[in-house]
Length: 202
Image 1 (cartoon, one colour):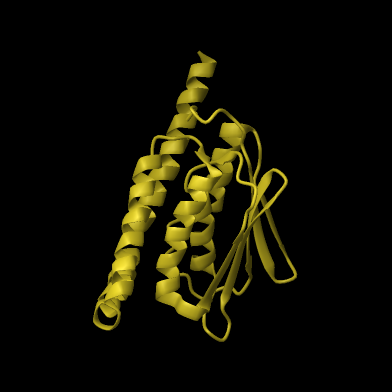
Image 2 (image 1 turned 90 degrees about the vertical axis):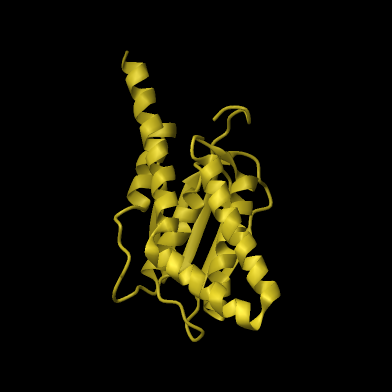
């Protein structure tokens, strides 16, 4: 009975992460920014506008496809992250610089967890051409690490209270492992444990 209750609790936590990730994309602030970028691109670069629509669709499709899964392959998550990043790069231009250096892609992580870490970096840090936000995604042994230069915003306009704490809680409940958060020398980093299990298990 205790095992069944724990499994049910884990499922609820997984669904909560997927729901909050989806909600973060359909909030008015995100949609307004995305549609404003699209509107400006249509007038000056129709080809780029078409790419933007494609990436926008990819982001929504991925989140909906992963909503019932507990883990996802790292290569699939990185494909999704590339689409997500490209939306922000079209909006921010040279104010955002992202480097992904993950050569070994075996293993799984919690779906949309990388997106949540990126969203956390976008939300809490300033980004401009003079002081661009620099983000790196790397792999070290059995961890995926997301790091960014720390240049905090004075005012955070979109603070829905969902982020590191919820991701940390889900990892702990699903795997018994903890994410690692560190800040030093102007660099903020979060390390996600990599999970190894058969591909046909959710």
